[in-house]
Amino acid sequence: MIDTKLTTNGRVSTESHTPAKAKSLDLAGSRMTYSRLIGALFLVGFLTYGVGSGLVTSLVGGSNFLSTIAASQTILVIGAFLMFLNTGVDVAKGVLFFPILEKHSKRTALAYLATMIVEVVLLSIGVLALLLIVPLAKHAGEAGAQTLGAILVQTNATAYQMGEMTLGVGAVFLCLLLFRTQLIPRWLAISGLIGYPVLVAGTIAEIFGLHIGLYLTIPGFFFELVLPFWLFFKGFQPEAYQGQATV
Image 1: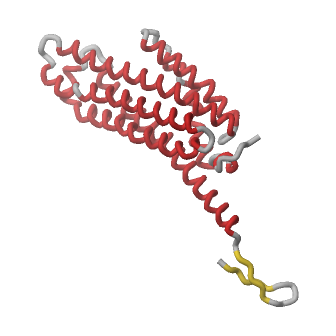
Image 2: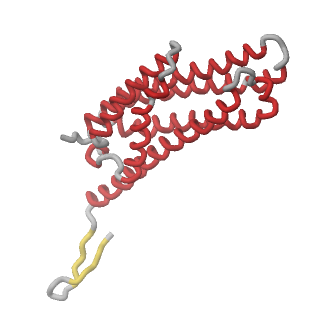
C-alpha cells in the first residue's frame, strides 16, 4: 500500500509500508486471536463442566437417589451433556497451544496435547457411567439396582480424579515452558507450578479415600481463572510468541 503526504517544501512524496511492518501487524493480530481463543476455552471448559457436574451431583448425592432419577432424568442428561462438552473444549486447548509451544519445545507441545486427550477420554468414561443411570432407574425397585447405581456414580468420581491427575501432570510441563520462555508473566507460571502438583496430590488422596481434594484444587484454580483474563487483555508475550528467546 502506498501513502502520499506533503513534505515540508510542499511537494508530494510517497512511501510504502514495508513488508516487515505488515508482517509485524499480522503477527500481533494472530497473537491476540490465539490468546483470546485459548483464554475463552479455559473459561468455557470451567463453566460447562462445573455447571454440569453441579446438576448431576444434586441428583445422585443421596443414598437412595435411584428412585428419584426417573422424575429428574432430563436434568441428569443436561448435566452430563454439559460435562461432555468439556471434551471438545480441552482438546481444542491442546490443539491451539500446540503451534505456540512447538516453537520452543515440540516434546512439551506433544506431551501437553497427549495429556489433554487422555484426560478427556477418562472424563468421557465418567460421563457415560452417569448416563447409564437413566436406564437403570427403571429398575430402581429391583435387588442390587441401587448398589449398581452407586458403582456408576463412583466410576464417574474415580474417572474424574484420574483425569484431573493426568491434566495436572501435563500442566506442570506446560507451566515449566511458560516460565522458561516467559510467554506469560513468571509469577503466573509459578502459580501453576505450585497449583498443579498440589492438585495431583489432592486427586491421589481422593482416590485413596482421603477427601481433601477440594481444598487442594484452590491453587490450581487460581492459575486457570487468572490465565484466561491475562490472555484476553494482554495476550502472550510477543517475542516469545514468535519463538524468540526471552531473557
